[in-house]
Length: 406
Image (cartoon, rainbow, N blue to C red):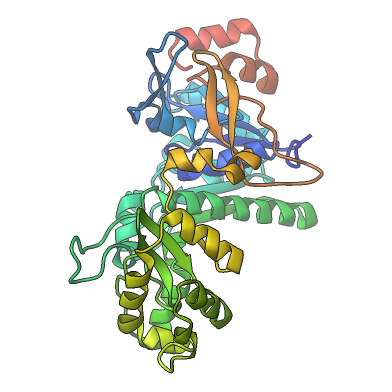
């Protein structure tokens, strides 16, 4: 039994932030009913190629993007633009603990599916709204996507090669990181609301915004600005507060060196054959190394090109200096540590026979994550869920299907 196996989640969200939160709750044992539009469903089902291939090697309709965020869920198709569909969603909400949605501000009120309407029929409901900009403020009505929020929220001003370098300019992170972080923060907020409900009773509304999350996750860079009034500049792969902490060239590629303290720098200098660096008045402390970054980094780059990446990693690991290669994803999933931790799993799939998944990083000793089911086909559980949760008989479900509600 999962830690959240006593809970039911009604997931009205699409794309990534909301489904990511729903998948985390599902991994932890919650029953997650994903409500989708009949016909097309979650937008990400069509966000390909690549698509999952069936047993004959042909593309299915299941995009890899969709498969990344929807395992352990049940898919129910309901057209809630129609009164009969709205009634079904309200009945499901009345029997749920949590609802996740990412419609535009006020978008669900027209269907009677907003928080105030559902609170009236289920005061214990925890209702999580995920939007680009939140429920208030001058941008509240705007749509928001991860890429534009990375730009608007400052992340891209910190990511990319420095001015003056070849290829200089802002660059987005290679995954939809703002969406992922919003899903994580939403999960934390939902669990906090559950704890409050257990102690004091009553549900509540959670207002999550991608922009809020992005600004909050600027972390030390935000504080660098707030304490100095100076906007941090792009440093490529370098660190604004630690030196050396970046990529360096090797005889056969590149590697990452992450020196976290002066003792580690001394060990690195010895491995690099330059022990005098550790006592050099320009480099002896991290503060000095940051101030003299422009002098030290070229010296290190001149030294690192004489050994291969594997040699640097082996020698520095033996010396206790944090470092590592720059792996592509094939190398990631072939890495012995990744394999030892079981970060790639497979689940049975109705069309493909099996589908690969990236395992949850959550490790609980008493209530471990369970991989119960693959990301569902569109509407795969409509009939079963309505019978089980709402007590509808086969004839009633079929009548709604014939009417185009399901």
